[in-house]
Image 1 (cartoon, one colour):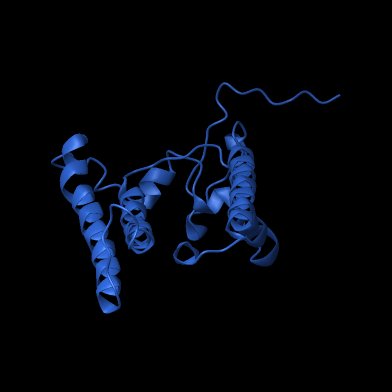
Image 2: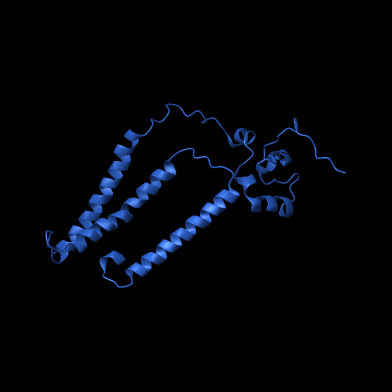
Length: 190
């Protein structure tokens, strides 16, 4: 809402917000590269909803533009409630257009969805017997809690890329992955 009011400290606010965004980006980038071995995006539902939630926020910019250009050279000149109505109309028009583009135009530009979902019959158990990394095994706190608080035998082992052979299955706690040691040699001690 700061766009609606003139302020001498607006640029300082935006510099602070820009610095905060850079910090969050760098920190998240560091954490993702350090802690997450890979990402799988099964669908664009999260992206679509993020774009849809952005519509009313960006609509505020259209409303503010209507307010700021009021009675300036070459633009409209509304007074009183009609200015408020014009700002609300600009906001509504933007939100409707934004959502229409997301619903109508964006799907036409993308790849069509498959007729039948190939993994519709896939269960967590059948998938986690093939893939070692899951929410349970990628969460170090869950693994520590499994070992020291719940005393599971065997406990949930943390997923580390290249160390999958250490993981032992325990179906009672949702750990199903087991890698055979074929082809692997035990380290020589001595």
